[in-house]
Image (tube, rainbow, N blue to C red; front, side, top):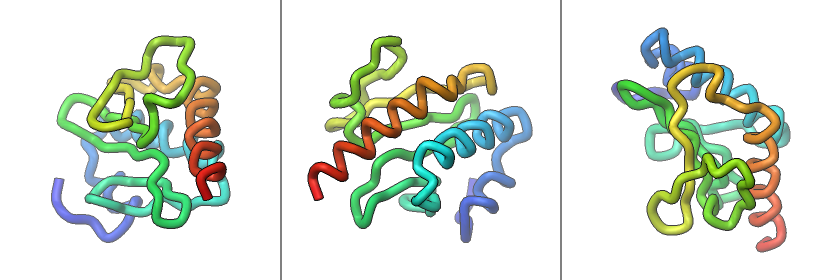
Length: 119
C-alpha cells in the first residue's frame, strides 16, 4: 500500500476481502467516538483526542489490526486483546465476523476515557 491523502483513499487501496473488515471496524470505532474524525497518522487511520492517539486500524496482507494505544489499561473480559509494544494492545481481524461491535465500542470508550481523564 502506498501513500494516501485520506482515510477514504487508504480504504479503497485495501484488497477487497479485507476492505469489508476495515469498513466494518471503521464504522464501529466511528460510532464509539463520533466526535472524532479519523485521520491518517503514520499512514493508518487513527482516532486522536488532540495530539494523543487513542486507537487505529492498519491493514496488512492477511489481516487488519485494531490497536489501542493504552490497550493494556483497558479491561478485556473476552481475552481477545493481545499485548503490543509499550502500553498498546490490539486484535487481528481476518473477517467481518471478527469485528464485535459491542466489545470494540466498549474498548474504545474505555480508551477514550483514559485520555479525557488525563487532560
